[in-house]
Length: 392
Ligand code: GLU
Image (tube, protein in one colour):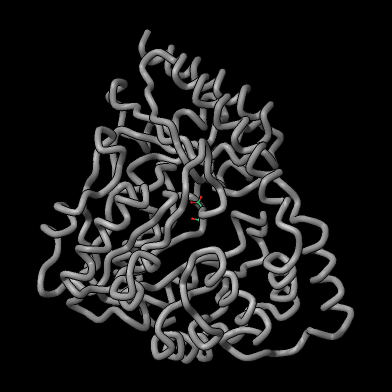
């Protein structure tokens, strides 16, 4: 066997802690341990019936062949309509590529846009794959820390200060994974002004746009002005809003030339997204939308319960997420590194959570409440006991 000299691009990348933690929790569950999993952000609902039915029909109709690398024309069209109607973004099908989940849309973007030496601005806490994807493309992630006091939102001045002549892209994620915060329209407009002034690209990860609480609204940065629109790229998908995580259908929208470049990369890497799954996605966009409100109400109930439980635990504190399905908890008073905290919590109490260090912010952890109420209440009791043991 020749020496296994792995490529530098992979040796500088960290494996996904969310996926690793989730796999560990699943393995423990399979061993019969009573695990409460708050790890992966994965809705526990079945994919709505009409979406599953559409994919089954497509399968029966023989939609089982290769399709265009950029996606089924009908789905690209449906996504373009959605972006026009929901987000006031003036895209046509040529501005849209269907990708293997939202994650792969961002990966394709990095591969098409980022070159060695390019800087990409990422506010922390961030979804853990952003910096790794930038590194895989040879770029340099520029991390801008935010604090609980600023509700984990990057402010325009911080963005302005992070911009250098090498800055190519700014990654904006609202509603946010892992903090659940949502930028207000005024905050989005202020960030858009900086993007336009500096003439950089912004990718807006809007995968949680449908999951909002307490009247929070989602504004796409591309809808702020024609100048912002020109510099905006949208990443989104069906996983979170329609409970379709395993389907792997996402999309990227932006200038046609960029989309064409991503399609070329996709044509040489994954080809098209599973053909019949794309027909399920068409049904998701064109069918009844009440499933979103139904799941949203369940998430809201769980959110309220988990905030209440967390605030009752001496030593922990948390904000009030306005979107997504994550509670971001400050554990700094325990003085334990977040990875140790989460490993010990899983080993001792069989509760799986994601350490803040995975999101570039020590002293915190993320709990996904996209799980049933019994698990939430039981898991929070165990978290309470774990913290009480540590504080004595
Ligand atoms: N995006 C989800 C999460 O943050 C799924 C896991 C992943 O893709 O990293 O939990």
